Length: 209
Image (cartoon, rainbow, N blue to C red; front, side, top):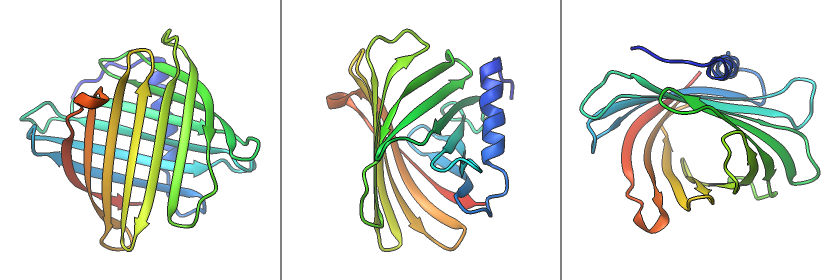
């Protein structure tokens, strides 16, 4: 596997390394998610982590790295990094900074705010708006994430819309807890104008460190 990296990509990878440190502390989690995409006959692996920043109440770092193989292949030659830092704010409004990078794409930093409403236990929602970015986009990106626990299962949807060109990324997911550290999941992904999105399903497991 050969990867072309930049300084910012290396920094993103370093942040992910910190997030994926032993996750025994309160406010921290880390997992690995091997999966298979049957429609494209390819493998994918996600490393995901999050941690509260020690000594700063309300500050949190989250990120993941996706390793993907081409169709009909298992060689994980492509990677994508997403890392996000959320700072303390006022009530449900919080400032947020996001980095995205990987091979085959231009690195980008996004700056904006998150709205985190207070919901009953087992329910979650986040709305993030990024009006400023380093890639020259003149219109904001809008992200929405919602989740709902249903017994041993959790249903969630993550989406973002690029308002500069109207394209939407959609990622629905259903998790089913198999044990303390093991979860089975079905996840879909698709990017296009909303009415034209075709979801590519994948199936895998999450192992919590």
